[in-house]
Length: 611
Image (cartoon, rainbow, N blue to C red):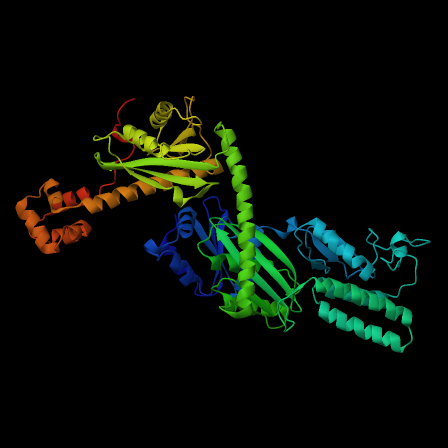
C-alpha cells in the first residue's frame, strides 16, 4: 500500500509517473506539469476520490517517474509508454492492427498500392484504417482505372516480355515492359495520394491544369485521358455530403460511452465534404468523457501523417491547449481543437456523437444477446432470459416490512417494471414468507418474466419454487437465487443456486454472467432498502422516542425543545446529540442505533422461519 510520506521525494518538474503493483507490473501511467503536485493530489481527495483512483491507490505498491523537459514532452512520452505497456487502468483503444490500411510505398521507383494490417515506420504512406477489407478492395477497384498504378504483387518490378491483362484493361501503365518515365509515374503517385487523403478539389484543380496544358501542346490523347480522370473523380465526389462551403479539412469526433465501453466516431471532412468515417471501440476504467477523448486523441494522431487544421469534438477535454500545441508541432502548421456550442460545427459534432451512440448500442445488443445465451446454457434455463425480474425484502425487526421488484430487459434496467409492495400478511420476522407474498402479488398482476431472481440462498430459492407451484401458472418463469459471498472469508465469491442442484454454481469473480446477476441483485437490494427507509421516514412520530432505551418523558421533552422537531433529532450527529443537556454518550448511541440501523438482512443470517 502506498504512503503519502514518499511524495516529497518527487521533483516539482514535468514528467511521467508510473503506478506499479506488488509484482512490478505497471497498472497506470499519467503525465504531469508538476510531478509532486500531481502525485500529492492522489492522496488529498479524501471522500471525493473516484472509484478508479481508489482502485489504483489500493493496488499500487510503488510509483516511478521520468522527468521531461516540458509538459509537451511528457505528453508524448506518456502516449508511447501507454502504447507499449497497455496498463490496466488507462483507456484501452482497440489497436489499429485489427483494421486494414492501404499502403503506398513511395520509397520504390514505381510504387504500388497494397492492403496491410499494421503500420510500420518504413517511410511508406498509409491510409486508413478502413472498417473492413471489402471497403478497402472497393476503394482500390475505384482507383484502378482512374490512377493506373502497377498491380504486380512483387516488391520489385518483374521483367516481362509483354504486359499483363491489367494493361489491356487500362488499369496499369505496365512499367514492367513499357517505357514509363519515373517522373510521369511519380505525378500519378501524387494524384493517388491527394485522392486517398480526400483532397479531391485540389486534385481536380491540378488535373484541369494538366489537361489545359496538354490541349495547348496539341497532345489531345493525354488531354482526353486526363478529362476522363476528372469525370471519374467528380462522379465520386458527387456522392459525398458537403458540410462546409469554406472547403475546409476537418476531423469531427463524436463520443458515446456507457460503463466500461465507449465508441468514438470520426467524420472525415476533406475539402468541405464528408469523404468517410472511422469508428473505434474502447474499453477501460474511466470517470468522465474528457479522459476518454484525451487518451483517444493522443493515440489516434500519434502516427498520423496528415493533420487537418480543424479538429472538432463533441465533448470538452481538460488538456485541449496542450494537445493542440502537440499536434501543431507534429503537423508543422496550426491545428486547433474546438468544442462548439452552436452552429454548423455543433451540428456536425452532434452527428458524430449520434453515430457513436448507434454503434455502441448495436455492439451492446450483440454482446447482451450472447451474454443471455450463455446465461441460458450455464443456468440450464428453459428459454433465453430476455426479461428478468428480481425480488428482495427489507424490514427492521419485522417492522414496516416491504418487498421490491426490479425488471431488466436485455440486460438493462426497465424502470417501468419496478414494483414496491407493503407486506400485509406477515407480522413477524420471516423473510421467507415475505418473499412468498411479494412473488404471489407480482405474478397475479400480469405476464411473468422469463426468469425470477431471488436475493438470497438455497432456502429462499426453495420458497420461491414452492410459491410458483402453488400458483399453478401455465408458463411459470425459471427461478434462481444469488447469495452474497461469505463474510470474513478471503476470496469468497457470490454464489448462484439452481433448482434440483445441491451445491451452488461457482463462477469466476469476473465472469460476465455472475456480474450481470450481481448487478441485478444489488439494484433490487438498493430499491428495497430505499423503499423501506421512505416508509419509515413517513411514519416517524413523537412516540418513536419512547421506544429508545434511556429516553423517558423528561429527555424526550429536552430533545424536542433543543432540535425543534423529531426529524431534526433523527438527522442529528453524535456530537450534536451529546450537546443536549441530560443526553450522555450512551443515550446518544442508543438514539443513533435506533434511527440508523440497517434494515433486516436475509433470513440466512438472522434466522428466518424454517420451511
